[in-house]
Length: 91
Image 1: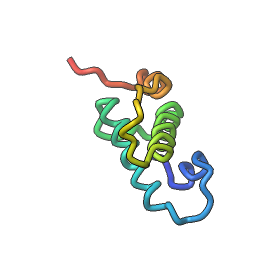
Image 2: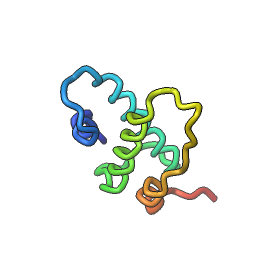
Image 3: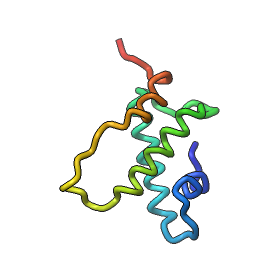
Image 4: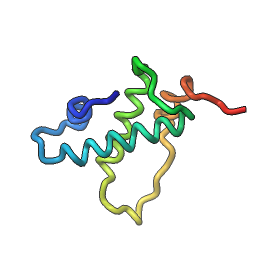
């Protein structure tokens, strides 16, 4: 599970002012990864590529936290490449 300190280190955030915000982004990124992987829980131990994908998503959420109606967003190929080997495919 991605910790607050891991995310803050990844984001290069000092101080505690945004801990609640970053924590909610960790939760959202973790849930997004679970949804993409078609899993109910993150594997324990967390595979390094899954951890990296969650941190990548946290970074994206943090960098783009303002309303961005004039921006065009694209699928992050790195995110998919990190998660695809762990994805459960439905039949």
